[in-house]
Image (cartoon, rainbow, N blue to C red; front, side, top):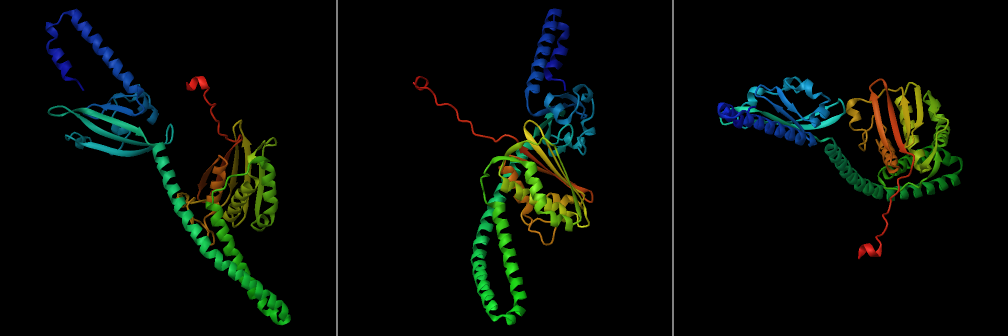
Length: 385
């Protein structure tokens, strides 16, 4: 991509003194070095190409995005790394190609790039490719969409809970009255007790579903206290032992012996552990093994729940934290939503890995130290003056 200035310089070369030529060359080298430093300071990736699509320059950010060495890529065809670019089409004046690209090495990133021609009077002198890292932007957009969805769901659930709560309370009162009358009827009333018990059980089930709705969406501040996470897990396993045995599941508790106490809301965390253990048992209908592993660093505790169940399909993975998204015909799809809410309110995060037919691993990262707000000191009177 030779500039018009260089072309004019070459034509006048025979009329220049050696000292002048040397000065011009040194000035060009200084300008080239300055431009390279400017390009390397940019957070956006910059790649320059010749008219044939070969790389003539690549800055530091582009090398980091694609995990490549500058010397190795210069002189190579860009089409070898970015498939589907039509260079004949690119040579047309005014052509701009803009695309999104996901890379997994050296880091998982979402990139957006566009390529446009550097036009001369008659033909393209080359091309410039600009690359932006939009990973954080996409993440913030997804979080905003999730927040809006959750707000809409909150309003819906609050309305449903209110509308259903009153008739359920009324039905409960009338069933209690019926139960009293059946007791007075003696043996004659026993024949109807089975129907009364079914109706009472179904009302309790509906009340439980409403409670799950509210637990999933109601913002509650954790009541933190220093708690041994191993004690919470052992208590959950003790309470769920009948369900675990009925499912034919073997539980392996593999926690470090020196697991530290950490700031937790015991009741909320037990609810989260109950949901994770129940989900694992339900995923292993024919029996299996649930391994609960606990480790820690100076900053956080890591808990993993590994089951040997049927796994989660790729389609289901994309909808795991959406309300009503469930793999079971009788599920409400609120279990993992509740778990994530509890974990995030503790300052932690949840991660799910699964392969269909190979089992699922759910990992929780929880901070060891409660994050507190630090207030700045008020300025002194002299400073205010």
